[in-house]
Structure formats: structure tokens, C-alpha cells
Image 1 (cartoon, helix red, strand yellow):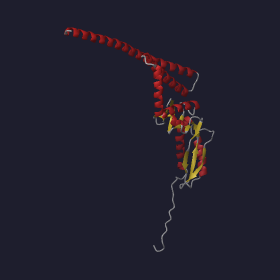
Image 2 (tube, rainbow, N blue to C red; image 1 turned 90 degrees about the vertical axis):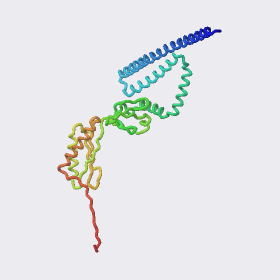
Image 3 (cartoon, one colour; image 1 turned 45 degrees about the vertical axis):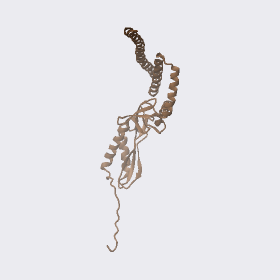
Image 4 (cartoon, rainbow, N blue to C red; image 1 turned 90 degrees about the horizontal axis):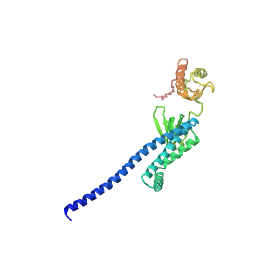
Length: 283
């Protein structure tokens, strides 16, 4: 076999290999493009379907808390099915994949038990309804307005406008205070009096002036009583009631009324302490 024959044979093999590679690369490229198209279209359809479900539930006046939780659950489920479908399009055995996912899920579940606990706690929050979206709560060490109850975390916007994500398990496993649940709440303030002050006149004056503050409820009436005593004198508890939406307005206005009402006609409370000095007879 001369050199020309060897070169021709080598060229033919290279051409055949190139043709095979080109054929498989073309087919694989088509599948890649199809997978991308399936993903984009599938994601759009998922968003459309979730939007339709949420609008349908909104027309039935379902609570926004349930709406968002159901939307998150449907989105995650449909995305998993979309990924499995795309892998099946590539010829990957989905039954084996399901077993693999189950094994991986078990391993992840053992390593991330807290994540699953958050998921379970989120379900209990939705079912038991200790609070809903829009409520002002104190839970998991965070105080603020509930913005969203997710699958794993709850979004709370604090009064200083900081969005805080708290794990559902931490919220559900701790005390929950819902300030929005009842139609009104009590404002807790104190007023220090001098020991020489007429406390009865101070109580009557504060009841009258605080009751005149805008948005203070007439029923239950304003409560002003002696709370405790200290070295300065009696301490009055000043407790007006108001709607939840007016809490801070009533809080600050009551402080102003206490200052103005007790500032002129009552002696300023000054701490006093008696000191006895004893000297020996020979000094």
C-alpha cells in the first residue's frame, strides 16, 4: 500500500467521523434548542396557569394568605414536572430519575431537616390561621406587618421599613402576638407625680384631657389610676383605648397631653433623699 492509498483511507475515515459527529451534534443542538423553547414556553404557561388559579380564588374571596401559599405550591410542583418532562425529551429514564430524586431528597431531608420543618410549619400556619397577610404581629423575635407567608419563610416588614424573612418553624414554635386580630388595643403610658401633688386632681384632669384626643375610644373609657410608688412620688398608669390603625398617633398625643396637663398646675417631680449625718461627741 503506497502513501497515496494510506492518505486516501485516512481522509475517508476522518470524513466519516466528521459526518457522524456533525449528525449527532446537529441532532443534539436541535434537542438543546427544543429544550430551551420548552422551558421558556413551559415557564410562561406555568405563570399563566398560576395567575388563572389565583384570579379564580380571588373572585371567590379567598384570603390573600391562602392565595400566595397555593400559588407557591403550584409553581414549585409544575416546575418539577416541567424539568422531568424536558429530561424525558432527552431520553433520560424518568423512573430512574424519580428514584434518584427520592434518594437525593431523603439525603437532603436528613441534612436539611430544618427546611422540611419550615415547610410543615408553613402548612400549619395556613390551616390554623394564627395570622394572615396584612396583620401586625410579633413572632419569632420580629415585630412588623406580614407581607407574605411562603412555603419555608414568612416575610415581615418591620416598623422601620426593614423586610425580614423568618423561618416558619421558628414562628410556629414560639409565642405569636397578633395586634390586628382584635378591633382595638390599649395604649400603656405612665405619668410621674410629685409626692406633694394632688393625685386625685391629676387623675381627673388626665382622664378629661386624654379622652379629648382624636381617635381615643369612648368605650372602654380612658383608665388613669395609681400604678406604683417610688422615691419621687406616685406613678400614674395612663391607658387610653384606640383602633389599631391609630395606635401610634394616640400614643404620641397622649404623651404630649401628659406633659402639657401636668406641667403648669402640679409641682415638678424631683427625686428626694434624706441624708442623716451623725457626729461623735468628741468631734
